[in-house]
Length: 469
Image (cartoon, rainbow, N blue to C red; front, side, top):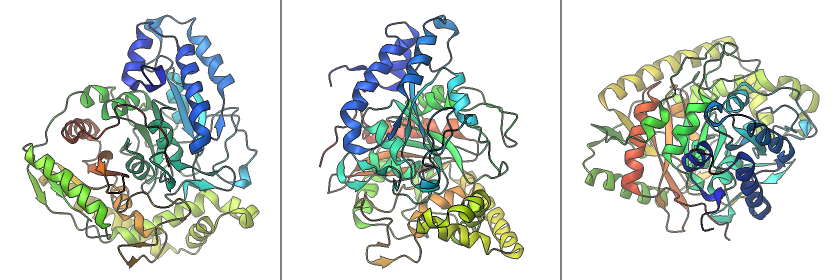
């Protein structure tokens, strides 16, 4: 590995691009060599577009260093649920297996406007449904720490690409837990930002707030760098907010919080014994470094019903046309979600929205008393990849395929930002993560706190991992 450019941190790569010590084309060539060597083992990047990327990188040679965008030619993979102009985009569904869009999503435009170079699409489950990355178009994405295990989902391909050095940073998205669970499973960092910071669309549901885009990287500073270029105001997104690019500065200024709360399960979900052991040890290390921690949690019990109702509605609203035309080609979990949504009535939707309002207020009040809330990111360690989803935890059977996602969707329903950082390995040598939950639009404080925790825990990937059985 030595000092191969693909192994650098994203901040290092951008710094060297900025100084002209390496060209965008040379950096892309190094990444391409890594993809050629590793991707066949993990199946994280099923579609590549290196010709397109090389043309973009070559264009930058004619642009003065000082006039290049924030990313200076940094290579980026885009999740296969986001459109990239002229690049095969399947949404993980055989109904779109040959789809080539003639436009790019707003977030892709944002990345390319800052001279990020898109070179691949990362694997995702069909329509991002389920936290295990597999589909009938490209197959399974495998966890590089154990190729028999799940990489999580739905941003599993993105997380694996970052962990293995096929990407410095990657774009992902988070509905229930889709950035955070893959980050935890692959020992990288994933940030679910507040709605509106990163432009979303085009979409038939421009006012939805459950699904957001965000970055994955190997450390908190690289996530801050990515946020500086991804976050921008876009008039086409009705939720878009003006945001100043100071996320990297915050991530490079670690700050111990004054006080935090810790909950092992939020009163919502069983958590596996091996996860409890690693997370508790991590929390104790933070306390030994002077962090004031109180065991407490807000009352989020209603998040189960509120999220499942609103998720079902969103699936039906977004995918009902595909359901009508291609029902037999959709996986059972997607069919179930859409059918649940189509059966909803106005009273049920109104009740879910009322519950969401109460839950958000409860969480915000809690976070005024406790600066942040720390929990395990996921309730289990990476599980066998053949299992479609987690159906039981520590002998406790779960009612639906969504229930093991509760530690993630309880945050989603409140509209809070949350970041997952590595906190150690299980007794099986598998990554475990903790998530820090912050106040809405408090990403800078959250990044500073996460950077402090990252430094104390010392579990971030200093160099990419080599896939292993």
